[in-house]
Structures are given as C-alpha cells and as structure tokens.
Image (cartoon, rainbow, N blue to C red; front, side, top):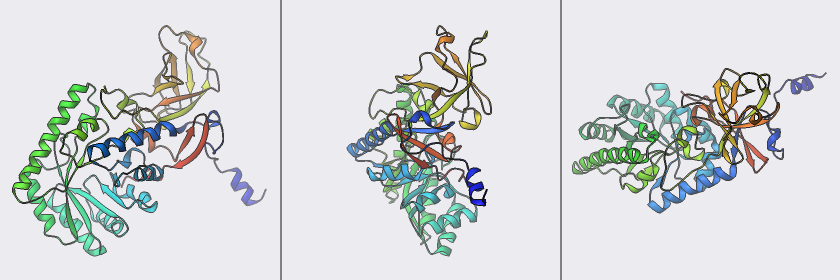
Length: 391
C-alpha cells in the first residue's frame, strides 16, 4: 500500500456528507435542523427590528462562523465573543465587527486584540483602570484602535463596577488614551436568564434594566453620553426589547434552544424551538429483557455537557413521552422506558436516537463539526472553527 493510500485508510471520515439520509450519520454527532434554526434566526431579527434595537448575537453559544454569517446576513450588526482567541476564526471568515463581552488581563491577550483590531472593528469590556492602560499600550504598539465598554454589575455579582461613580472614573481613563474609544456600557445579568417562572424572570429583568438606566442617567448628568448599552440574553430578550434601556442585545442560545432554556416558562414573543441535537446510536440492548429494562447509546459525558442536566430524548413529535436518558458515563448513555411505558418502548439495536443537550455552549466545544439536515437528508457540514479557543 502506498503512503498516500495508507494515510487515507487511517483518516477518520466525516460523520456525514451532503445528500446522505439523516439516519446514516455516524454517531455521536451534533445535528442542526436547518428549518427550525432559520426560523429562530428570523424571529429574533424581526423582533429586534420591530423594537428598534440592534442585534449582536453571542458566538460563544455556537463557535461556528457559518452561523455568525447567517445572522449578519439577516441584519445583525456583528457578534460577541467571550475570549479574544475565540474571535480569530470569525475575523478570518469575514466578520468585521466583534465585541469581546468580557474583561481581559495580560499583555498577550491585549496584543492579540490590538492586532485583530487592524482587520475588524473590535471592542472589549473593562472594570479596572489597569485594564485600560494595558489596552492603550497594546493598541499604540499595533497602530490600531480599540473600542472600550465599561461593564457595570446589574445583579450578576461577577464582573463589572458597582456604581456610576466608578463607571465615570473608567470613562475618564479611557478618554485619556487616544487609541481607545469609549463605546458605552455593558450590562449583563446572566443568572436571570435561567429563572424558570415567567413573572419572576420578568421582575428580575426589570430590576436589572433599572440599575443600568440609573448609571446611564448619572453619566449623562456628568456630560457623558452612552451611545450603546449592550447586554441581555435569550432568556430575557422579550423584556429587554421592550424595556427601552438596551440599544443592543447579545442573545446566543436562541439559535439552538438547549434543554436548560427549554425548561423556562414563556408567554410572549419571540418564541424559539429546539434545533440542535446529539445524534446517538443504540449500541447495546443487553438489559432490555432484564429486571431493569434499558438500552445503551454511544453518547456519554465526552459527547455532551451535563452541568445543566442530562439530555432529553427527542422524537418526531417533540420530547419523547416514553423514554428518558437517565445516566451518562464516559462513552455510554443509559436510556430507560418511562414509568408505564415498559420494555416495548425501547428502541432496537442500531437505532438512532436524537438527544437535546442540556447546555449548548460547552457541548459545542466538544465537536469539530455540526451536521446540518433538512427534513431527513444531510444538507452540509459546518466546522465548529472556534472549538477550544478559550485563551
């Protein structure tokens, strides 16, 4: 065998190819239902347009340039990334407006951001004057300009300054450096995104927006206009759009609607549906006739994040009424019949099961590709190009 033939024989083939039936996807694999995905994109963009609010979706949810470009094509002004390195493949793919919705520390990260700012409109958050000085030095060295947002803490209890006085001090520090431009405020409250009860989540969103509005007003009194107030997420978007405080929203998971977001109570618009699944295969039915009927699928802990719970088994009509994914091991998942369903509900050896992951963001970070389907056919494969870029 020649060297080239040997190399081809030892190379892992893609999980799927365009034109194949969806049932032929090699598993475990990430699967995106393009029809549902595209409806989610359009509903979010239309809602933002109606409200007169800019949409800057968060790419940390998907890490996939093809998705970012699809959002921008529908009207998004750019994207967010959470790490500087995560932005690299998006710039390479032609995304020209990226906000790092996080603070950074260290000269290496500042230098990378400043280099990227020579190729795209880049911005970043600060909550300390030392970050400002480091960014200014890196931008001056690279000959670039960086937009800077002051992050304020509106209830998350994580990053961000506590009050308007501290925010104003940072604005003055930014304005003292020519390579930097003050762009506005970042105001994000991540915890409320996962408040299940609708009314409680609405109250939390109103409180967060009120805190942000107070800082905007105080800065205005000091002669500082906040052109942009950016933040919000998939769980609060309905309230953020109507609140009159945010000029730009950063939802990310709405493109997929993972299991965690699916457990929230929703009443208004926009409404989103599950589009992302993990395709798995029944690899063992040894226990199907035993005292505890079960089957084993080939998607376990190395195929999904379980910090937000185990995945849900999905069927043609939505969440399965008869099967539950009950345990995840490294390479195995245990699926059992729901009470009353019995062993007859279990799928056969070799059957494909679709699972809704509990948390899309870290699940995406486990895969090289997303297999895109329309109906029951594979439409294409998208690289998860920012996978692993967490520096």
